[in-house]
Image (cartoon, rainbow, N blue to C red; front, side, top):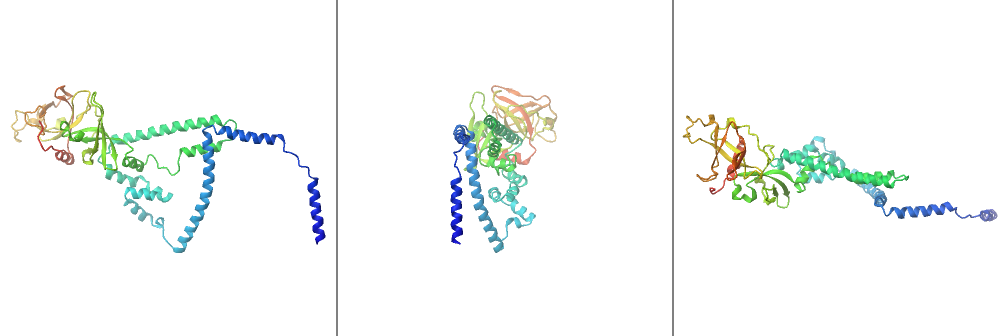
Length: 395
């Protein structure tokens, strides 16, 4: 036994001595130098950061996935042993009823639990109710168009960044197989689990956090300045979640700079009832049906450089009419009398007249210019104006 072992060792030693250890060929040293030069030169380019981050992320993801897998398997075993029930085990109708009753902050928390709950919690039919409940009175078609334009502008910026990065990749991919670098760059541009930008949830959160300015109208602008009592002006608004109020930016009046008002309360806001820009004359479609006692809003501006504001008034009787309903013929006259009873009798702002058949912008640089008219049919709109009625009669 010992003799066999001794002979085997001697044979192995003689075999090693018979091998001639030759040095590495010259191309091997050159490849080592090329590899060192390539990584050294690549570090000067921005693409190096992508490669470095990708390698680090890949290494970290492997270790984290392994540890997560162990933890997840242990949790599954514990659940199976204890027999606990998950929310996802509920019937579909029961789970839907629970999600419909959750407030927005709870829906956001539930969306971060797992991918299955995330798909349910970000669905538009859930967030549409929250949008209408909180923002329905101040968000109109103009705000929706502004949001769509905001999304389009963001998409344009993202596409520009992607084109620049793709140009860098084409520049540095000379002959090298860098397809995996391209995939990593694309992954960086589209983060995982990002919220769909066109979802109602994304719009709600943009409004709620104050990251989106939207057009609306403000009653009694500039903290109820006496010159704007019982009026409603267009403005850009931004929500402040800390104070539950808004910041308003009013368009410039001639040479006057943009006016900014802070602390605007919810009850002073409304969505624009008609889709007419503040500098455009509204086409009146109610002139033939106006009669004494009707509640109206009329466009008015100080001069032609100013935007229009909407002012509250009522249709009055002609001077030749005694106001008796049995004998009143005012509704058949071509002249319509408008009364602004918040001003004292005899004030130049108290009365105005318009032509029923040929109405256009009327006025002068002293009394201002009257524009289009809209008749108020809603009791809610009329009640809102009465709530804003000044305590003192205006001069």
